[in-house]
View (cartoon, rainbow, N blue to C red):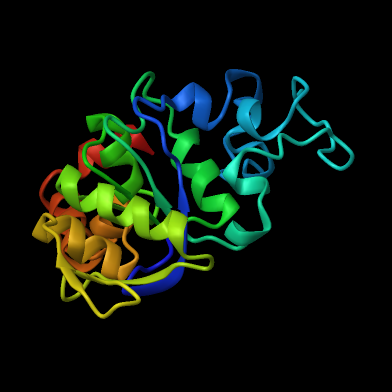
Amino acid sequence: MKKFTQVTGIVAPMDRANVDTDMIIPKQFLKSIKRTGFGKNLFDELRYLDEGQPDQSCEGRPLNKEFMLNQPRYAGSTVLLARQNFGCGSSREHAPWALDDYGFRCVIAPSFADIFYNNCFKNGILPVTLDEEVVDRLFAETFANEGYEITIDLENQTIKTPSGEIISFEVDAFRKHCLINGLDDIGVTLEDADAIKAFEAKSRKESPWLFDAIG
């Protein structure tokens, strides 16, 4: 999993509430578990004017020019600014996969659906919850300033805006540790690899018949 320490990037505004996981990555694209290749179909129903199909090339597809990801000012965005209850709907892990594959490293919103929120941490994306008034102000500044860029510092749990304003945010200490060190669930387990091997060696010595049965 990619580490997250500090990210500076352009903000893309998703100015709608209750964006569900089917809107983030529509169901017809959920045929792979490779975690990659989903970025081109992120927000597919909003980005394109036709209905996308699996394995279809997106080159030449008619674009919805009103959608923010199709506007030059938001090209290369790595921070997604969203509204309430972002990531609601099904528990599909493909949603953070698609966001990550597109290039987003952080999502800021007043609230998130619980499962989506947890899945983000497991896939190297930092979800930041801020008060709605602060999010409103960030939306206003993003719309007013082309190339609006902020810096998210996970170590210090701060967001720095172009004006120099510092916004603090909360994050669970264990999840913070995992993101900073690039640890998913397997990576966390492997931190104790030596202890696990020692336990297995002791068990093999004390109860060899168990291992014979397994072998």
